[in-house]
Image 1 (tube, protein in one colour):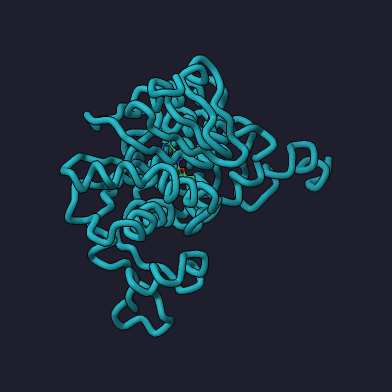
Image 2 (tube, protein in one colour):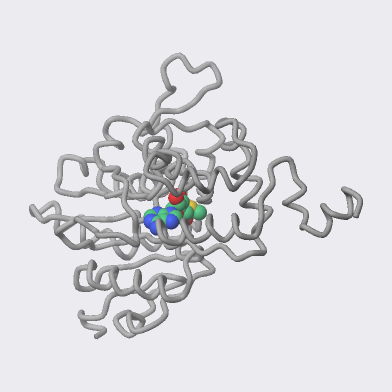
Length: 295
Ligand SMILES: C[S@@+](CC[C@H](N)C(=O)[O-])C[C@H]1O[C@@H](n2cnc3c(N)ncnc32)[C@H](O)[C@@H]1O
């Protein structure tokens, strides 16, 4: 067989710049599932190749077998995190799915803010926060109703499995274009021109950042937070999990919500499995935990 025919018989990715066999793909997919609960079907082989090829170049490796050996070894723990970062999809936006923020502003926050003004504790969680646009949108919504919020016991926990995006969120610096969907009055009050940035990047103000606490957290690992939440945003992440993993996460959220607490999920997601019975629909992809008047 000539070289071209042999390459075609092996499959397109075995003939690419860095050979990736079906076994390499399966090993990478198994590691990602074990680490994050993310399920990648074989139809995504090209995507996995294109996201990891930079890592092979950076490490001067010749093929994916060597890469699998590295990330599967104890010495490869740091690279395993790089792999996770490269394979997670971090797409997000300020005020993404704006109906959730309108629901939060008009139906959920008013009694919570009242309670906080009387000295109560209010907790919100952006679970899978990516680079911070979602938790800062929640915080801006809070500040729009109560400019003194940071002085009250209101806090937003922002977590993601990918430490890089968590660090970006903590820095709180965004391009002006990224903020176009934020209400103009809130944007100009809570963002300032980042020092020395000629391209006009904007920095989240101290007041805004004080409301949000960023942490690295795997939704499929142990959750160390002792308390419950009044509001949980978990949007556009469980779509990457298989059904079993999704159901386990929904069950854990039900146990982490206060009575009448609200769970917001992504537009293409549904609460399924035994936990679904714990929730009632409260708007478009918004659910309330049963237990209040509607129970
Ligand atoms: C598409 S972004 C969604 C961001 C935001 N929630 C939104 O809707 O705009 C998905 C995020 O989920 C995170 N993620 C994936 N698997 C995770 C896991 N097991 N635990 C926590 N976060 C995870 C990714 O790192 C990524 O930042």
